[in-house]
Length: 381
Image (cartoon, rainbow, N blue to C red):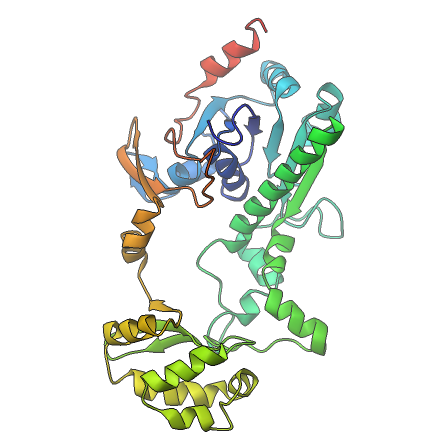
């Protein structure tokens, strides 16, 4: 029994942003019913790589859900969805603004038959404003949010983050909004409309960059691996690989100088305080790199750990997913899909002591639970 057990969510969303929100709710016990179009379903079902003919990405962020195939343009489909919405707690969708209203299922229409309904919507640019009607993808909003402008080496073209940061951020913000609306419903008895956009979600992650603009009125420069307010705080090359070192705190900096057997660095006016090191980060990195390249990563990580300085290896994803800390925290769990067979998937990051979340079921096949769910509409209360 997860913390959200008993809540019914109708998830009409597709691709990643909305389904990610639905996954978070399902992981903590909500009954998330994924409403899909008959014949094809969520287009993410066609996203490679495939295992047993099933999309691995789709299976990861649609676990713990049930699938119902409904044609929302047909009268029967409309009637079935309306019946489900009448008793549901939450609706999630990520269509362009106005799409659901044209189908007869906008917030106003659904709230009229279910005043307690919490309606969550994700769009590219929001339900208002001059860009309201534009389609938005993660790629587009990464560029428009400023994130691309500060990613990558100091010289060269803008870099897209290889992770879909706008999508995932929007899914998480919508989940927070829905849970906030749920708490408000406990007090008022009424649901409400909750909306987020990919653009605003991506923009909100640029906290250091926004602070720079607000404080100086100037665009923040691209600084590669460096940190805007802390130094040393970045990736360094060793004799056999790469490590991260976060030694900006003064006590850590002094310990680092001792580990490197370079006490003169602590007295160098260019590097004496954190603000000095930030201003002269390029010179500092050159000096530190020369020291760190003398030994392998294991040597430095052991010394840094013994001194209590935050540091770590730079792992590839396959290494990260087999790391002992990740495994100990159950962030990789196994499930069995009816078609793909035994599968590994992410565990649940938020650990609740009394009502923990978990992975109770694999991602559903298209329409797998249609008969089961629709039969419940006509069951006596």
